[in-house]
Length: 384
Image (cartoon, rainbow, N blue to C red):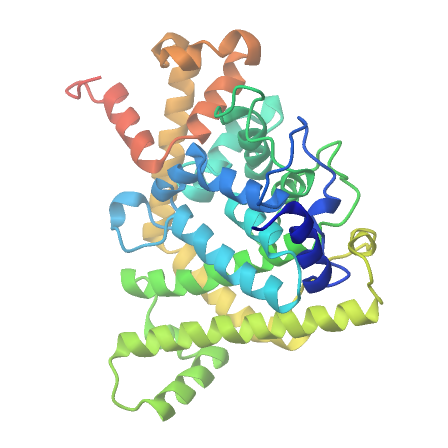
């Protein structure tokens, strides 16, 4: 049977010197005994998967609001895609795959309903109370809001996973800083990989969803050199396939190309900095998980197209405006009428304060739940 001793031996023999070994964790806030046959990070991963916040990601928006259709990515499907890409990269570099997966699965737990529009609305509403950051909210979810264990609040995750949640950053995500989670140190390489996997995932699945919705046109993509070059390769190999097959093959090639470039670039950076231990990575003044300059240039027009044609499309802008209004009106109503909150939510107000409790309640909603609440509260003909 697999034992903690054998897990230690396997990690020593298989992981790179700069990978974090699970037995080197800085521990948990509340001390627990080790599991007989799971590593610390495997245990964290499993706790995240079984959490209520993780399940709610199924009905939280990525780009398209939930009722737009069941084909489009949600926070849950996006999270699974990020975890798959991050695992592949971590495995190739002989990093700790379990830690990488745990951070990937947790990276969006603090997201509001209605995607970044919901987050922007809550940030404005919470400005006088410190604002709103979904990374910091994610930490709050795993440290306080999840209620699953009688011995401690939250999920009691390891220091490294909690740090990874707070320091997650991308083009759309701002890293947070928390005392006690090394705010001046660089993220672990495992966390840095999740950040890039996040970008790879949403760039490529937004292309897929954008084409399916009709907001992106194939003609627009064919003007992008990176897409056009891959289209020619695919057309050369498969001359008589359906257009949607071409789309899938090109997107798969895009992901593979970016992942390969990233792995090769990280290897160069590790060699250049002569990294032998994960603490040396944390002492650097910049991230070493990055694309090559050539890949960054190739990706730039594609990302600009997504911003112009998809994220700023009038239909997406309208969805964003409506989403913000839902959040704003729900927030104001609950602040003015806290007795309209469910009893278990009201019960938290004496300890946490009304504004914090209302923020937590709304942030934890799914798109569907928020829309239902809005209907119940503002439609006079809807049952409450």
